[in-house]
Every structure is written in structure tokens, then in C-alpha cells.
Image (cartoon, rainbow, N blue to C red):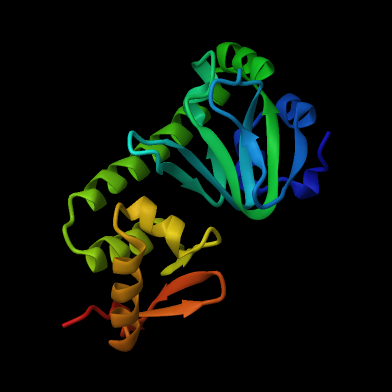
Length: 211
């Protein structure tokens, strides 16, 4: 069981009291695996702090990042799946909450208000994935990076607990190209590197973009 004070407001407002009572807290240590590909899902995991990366091995043998989560549910599709289709690796230490899947399914089937809240959460994830597709259509490394900070950051700040190499993988660019682009954006005063993240520089309420 988890203490109510340790549950983020977003999760407390989403889940029913019985699901909150059945959930448990997990400590996330860097390098640990939350789950592995082909394992049977038993819990739906909500990341409270730290970072989880969903990845699987591509045809060339290199890891392909499918999702990066600093806060929110991981692998929502596993609710209706017999096995995980990827690995979940902790790239930055933190904490997660494990919600048992079987009681979750029962609540979704019997509590219409909860089901509507769950659909709303999934809709928000769909919007995030649409933004990700839009980002992949951009050609320049700088445009992709700025798009990510603007769409996935909070108030212009994007946490990058997993490091720049992981970020480069998610942007589908080489880490060398990302390093060069980031150095250029810093020099032009567009982005500032802060502890554990990137911050957009705003001028009179607008983002300063390179010229």
C-alpha cells in the first residue's frame, strides 16, 4: 500500500480509491529494468520521478527508443497485451507507482466515470504521439530539438535525466550532430543548459530562435 501523500495529484484524481489502496511504490535505480520484452504484464506503472525509457533492439543491433517518460504511465498499451513488446530501462533514478492490472480492468469495466477519466488520459498521450510524429517530419536537428522542448517541456524546461545520447536517439539524429547543434544554440542564446535539463531563452514572452 502507498501513502496518499506520496501520490501525485494527477494520479489521485485519475484512480479510484480502491485502486490507490491496491497500488504500491517502487524505487527506480539507474540501470534497472522495470520489465523486459515478452514478460507478462502484471502492473501498470506510473513514473513519479526519474526517467524510464522504453526501447527494443533494431535490425542493426542498436537500441531504438520508443518512449521516454519522466512522469506518467509507461506502456499504456500493455493493459490489453499478453506480453510486453519492449524493455523498460531506468535511465535516471526516481520513483514509480505500480497499479495492479487485473483490478484496473475490473474498475474500467464497472465504473463509467473512471473509464472516462482513463480515456481522457489516453487522449492526452495520443496528442503527445502526434507531436512526436510532427517532430520527426522536421529536417533540421535544431528544429527537432526546439520542437521537443516546446511540446514536451514544462514552461520551456525539458528534463534530460537520461543524458544527451539518449535524447539524440529519440530525435533520430547522431549524438555528434546533437552536440554541435546544442553548442550553436547555446552560443546564439536560444537554449541554456541547466542541471539535468534544457531551458529555452524567452525574450518578451517569445522564444528566441536562431537567425
